[in-house]
Length: 577
Image 1: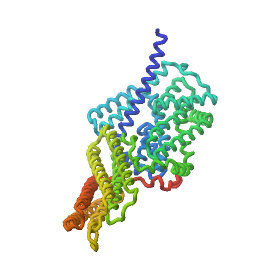
Image 2: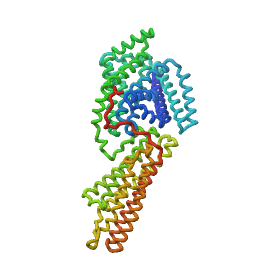
Image 3: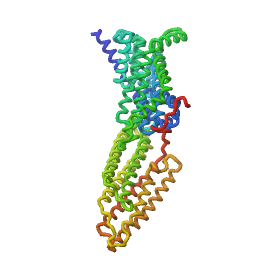
Image 4: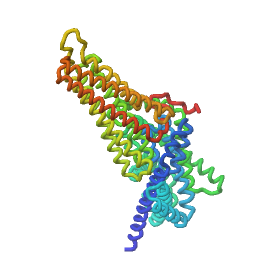
């Protein structure tokens, strides 16, 4: 009985250690993302302007959140939300791979040299105190991160106990030949896919090597496999994402695969060199430190390999995955990966709302051009209007889903106040588009009645000033055509919208009075008067909705500027710092 109890208990301890490590990492990552809020966006805007800045930012942020997988998924979300350009995000992802080696150093320095109880428990106590006293605030989020840091190291302690209980012979022996190393790579890849965190795999491997259950060469091969396995989460995050996000996921896969191939080819020489230098510096050989240095070295080697290849790689990827960007009905900025950070999700929603407003104003302008004084519309004009409205409705549906996802998170006061405003603005654009689509279809069905007596001008000429004023308003109220909200000229843009609104109101009254006179004088049939007056009324309602949307948008806090460059912009050379 006792002979089987100890291995079973050790195996349970091992599983518990992995669970605690993953729990701690999740708490740490989520807490820091919530605590950072808009500061994270400002860091991304200010520190990713050059490849070197992007690389350093990727290293630093990954070292902070202790998860290259989370950072890569976040980078994909930031690209989707328009907070990062593709070229900047490329180097953030490369830096996140290098930053993941910090986890190994923490495990080696603190996990094996400091008593876990004395180190981790105070962090858990302090963190939970902050979390409970400040739940829903930035202090509470920081407390969650601090508690997660402590839980993470409790997990490492349980891993050590588990491997100690199992003994050095508990794991199947893997040879250090090519076949054994290839199998170790696959095991490391599989563990990362299952655990969804390469850092967890690294912690397991380091504790196994420290306990003598794995040879250093085999552990190194498993770490290489973990680096490849971490790309799966990025691939899954990019499946339903924008073209830029899928390009970024492809770049991440290429980086990790190329790095893994080179590291596996140089495995023996690298480990021998690291061991020789370590013995020369310290006088003894430490397997854990050797493995941590190897992990750092081959990630650094990957960055050096990509340095000259980044520019052609970016150009190659920018020529792919273009179909999604050509789909107007697909959200460009909304992404489930960024919805986990409410402050950033709000910025993404603001940018998507600008695009929704542009499409709504475009539809309204196209519908307005169907009325006099413009020429009779083409036969396919009605179908085109229907497609435009369907596109906008699909986008608004995605906006609603995204808002629901964000609302499940703990929201700061700023985010909680702006979210209803954005939904109200979405409602204005929705109503405007529906009204103008219906008005356009009505114009297509209504005959352009001429004067009843020869020699008279058409009474429909009275519509021309009002239609022209409506068109001028829709063009002025287009959020993409107006001065950006983040610039000092935002008030000037709103003033232009106000002026266009006032002009339409004046011409509307004149046009309506002219139509009624034409009906009273018998120049226009009464039924036609009602139809064209109804069209004017629809235009007026749409203009009112657009004016409310523009005024509400102008009242929101300014956005940070979009990152320099776009998907189609030239990609800066890494050397051109």
